[in-house]
Image (cartoon, rainbow, N blue to C red; front, side, top):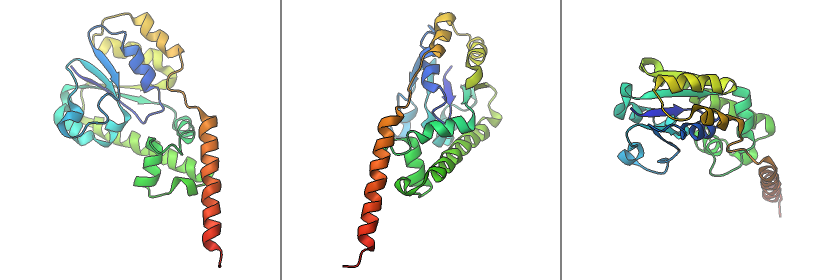
Length: 208
């Protein structure tokens, strides 16, 4: 049986997979096929646990290929906490939140103030969670796990998929920091881009 961890990102998915790698009867990976297209995007091995927040934009294809046969986890975190975490990555060009703001919402990230950036982050979180909830409406094998109760939820998940391995080592992974954002570097990158953009706008407004 295949298992998919669906989430917004910034909600503990990397730590979840680290814990799953202590399961002996399943393989587990984080965003292992995110750079693939077409059918190759979904060619996961059997008895595999995959966490990839980008799958929330390809749920139609996921349904066609795995449908009701797979087991799904909706990994959730408090919406405002998740949005604040995305705020620290807002100006990274390859980040999901940058792509959402710039590509989907058509809001140039460098031109947004702090309140506007947070509004976009919160909109992203609410959109993705809504997509996942709708997808899971008819799925018989699923569980919702809140990040603030991750150990309790993981134990229930472990039992639900008949996992074998070292549960104590798996749970210990949640005491570690995984995929932590480094906000200082991003802050200065963002500040420089804002200043440069304002400088260009001033130049354009000048009449020579």
